[in-house]
Amino acid sequence: MKKKNSVFIATSIDGYISDKNGGIDWLYSIPNPAHIDMGYAAFIQGIDALVMGRKTFETVLGFEVDWPYEKPVFVLSNTLKAIPASHKGKAFLLKGSLREILTQLHAKGLFSLYIDGGSTIRGFLKEDLIDEMILTSIPVLLGGGASLFTALPHQLEFELIGSNTYLDQITQHHYRRKR
Ligand SMILES: NC(=O)c1ccc[n+]([C@@H]2O[C@H](COP(=O)([O-])OP(=O)(O)OC[C@H]3O[C@@H](n4cnc5c(N)ncnc54)[C@H](OP(=O)(O)O)[C@@H]3O)[C@@H](O)[C@H]2O)c1
Image 1 (tube, rainbow, N blue to C red):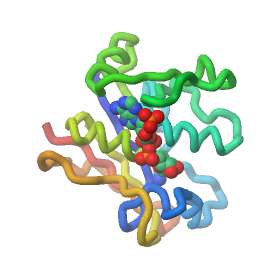
Image 2: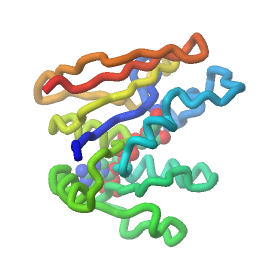
Image 3: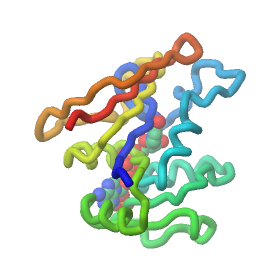
């Protein structure tokens, strides 16, 4: 089974994943009456598990909707003591180095991983552990907030393997790490 760590995330034109107040309402600023999913369902079908930062996990819990994932979610945290009882069996706490975490997941037969959360994605990129990125760009300049990317120890080259435009407004680029 091929090991693959993937990112599927939306940013503003200026590269933020949340606004100055930590909000993500702007993600839904383009009317989408037919609720097109922009490739999300096909993407999520192809993964074995999610690896999510604690802050994104808490954001999802705060939505107060039914748990949106059918695949297991591994939450990275050094501070969270336990997964809330309501989500036991659906989400699991992990800590350790990213390579140790990946070894643990691969040993469970989970090879295709969706990496989510800004700081979490940056941690994986710093160790050159991201194999593909599907980046969706919402046409807004937020002018501040949480950036998706930061400095890296060295340049990482990707190749573009596909692009889509949705709702005549939203662009999506699918990049694969050149190795
Ligand atoms: N635009 C989008 O599509 C999109 C998608 C996802 C999230 N978001 C937004 O992004 C924000 C969350 O991103 P974020 O950058 O703040 O945080 P994040 O990556 O979701 O969570 C960061 C936390 O994850 C834990 N963590 C990360 N790497 C770890 C490691 N190697 N070992 C142990 N723990 C680790 C730490 O938790 P502890 O502090 O507990 O140790 C860290 O503080 C939210 O506002 C969310 O709404 C936007």
